[in-house]
Image (cartoon, rainbow, N blue to C red; front, side):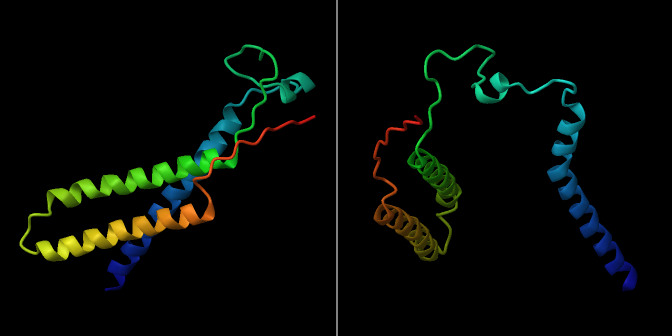
Length: 133
């Protein structure tokens, strides 16, 4: 019995170390492979870099937080809608009424999230002009 729990502990430790390795590994690799000896000049740190070309005009644009909230809502609901496809495939089982109740509860919770976001004003897109000067 003791031998079995020791193997379980080793499996958990191995998965933990693997997870930490996947989380920290990219930072270590990028630090080791980053170019050395280049000096950060003011032009490099303040100018926008895109495709190696100098920006034309006032290219510094800040997007409003509403844009990101829309994107987050889209991703959340896209994942939730993808959940509905497998549910629709197994919906013809013998316990159809139970499945219907679960599906209505799921869509109801999604509807509550939309109502909450609507009440918080997430869907009101107000354009704000950013003037850094």
